[in-house]
Image 1 (cartoon, chains in turn yellow, purple):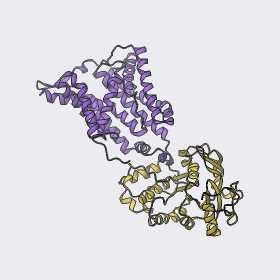
Image 2 (spheres, chains in turn blue, purple):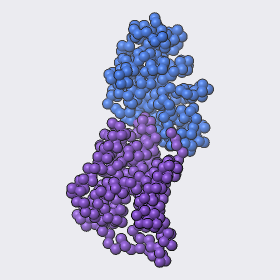
Image 3 (cartoon, rainbow over the protein chains, first blue to last red):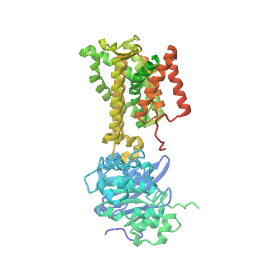
Image 4 (spheres, chains in turn purple, orange):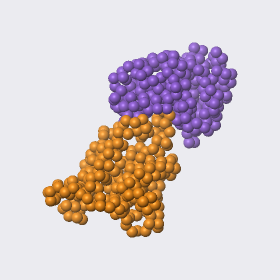
Length: 266
Length: 290
């Protein structure tokens, strides 16, 4: 692996050296929400087969990053590349065809459609690949019996599973998972994350956003921490100490490094 | 017996109201666009049929073969350009834009076709009827219009619930952004819904032009109003509801007219207001998912 050295502190500049094997690359991305700068010069490189986890506190810019990658949010500057191809001109729906599919925050199922219809919509513009609706039923066996039920009537955890299924049947190359655990019981979250190895075995690459750091550390091959829109820390989880992560997460003085130069709010 | 007759006439004319209303209901349900030019489009369709008949000499009854596809294409184009441009700004802008469209259409018709009323001449069919007893007579034309309306609404319902395009239309109506994340171009889906809405309102306009006379202002004065009432009475988002709403409106109007000829429109509006007070979600509305 050509990962950067353990616990490397990144100052928000561009990251080089891993682009050879990159499937998804984000270069120096800056995104605004109106006047607010939600992301500031964030760069990252996701290699095929990785589980790349973005962590950070509320409002750190994690979801904005995923929304920018999926095309829902226009960046102010910087570029997003899939297999070296710049995605800037592709609308969100075209990025699905390119192989980027997101499971959005809050599930966002079609509530008046049945479980099966939700999956069918997901498969409408599918790329060729291993995932079929039947495969999703095998992954989540309860779904087969309840395929005729309206998605709006499912529990939060069930909806999350359907949302993952809806993304899978599009046969993405990169699956973006935005806050899977939001509003779900820990046991439910664990069960959903247990399906991750099966997804990876089918050749997927995963870029996920997770507020639950310990959950992210359990599943990720690479951790990337954001604080107020800037990168504060990244590296393989095995190489990062709990103190480093805590410091980068909360922006404690000394660990934040020269990147922000800003004190975290007291 | 005259009461039975009134109810039968009401049911039949209600089919026409439902045909008017289904496009309005579809555009609101899918794009959240309240198309204030909806009634005027029906009138334009009737005038277009006049033109088509003059040029091609097809019998008036068959004019729909040309007019409906023309309006479907027009619907796609207007949705993708004018209405989408308004939607990109805000939902309120669509109200202004469709209101403006309505004014433009009416004045253009007044300018180029004069204020005279016209009708689509379908020959003896207009007066042929089935006589049942001495009191009840069912006009063939109204019966045919009713059957067409029911077939169109059922067909549309089937299309929405069973075809993959219909599924996409419902998905986009639920959540545009999530549909985009599934690879669907919601603007194109909106265009398809616009095409269906314009096609059905054109068909309704032709049926109306054969059944009654029309002039440039009848679109907003009557047709839009009745379509709105049918949609609200039946409940938004359900084509079954629209059919029920249209029929109920027709029946109430005919009963009102039976009591006194000047009560026809009033009776319909009273029921419309009553429904708004007692059951604002409409008679057949499904449980709210919001």
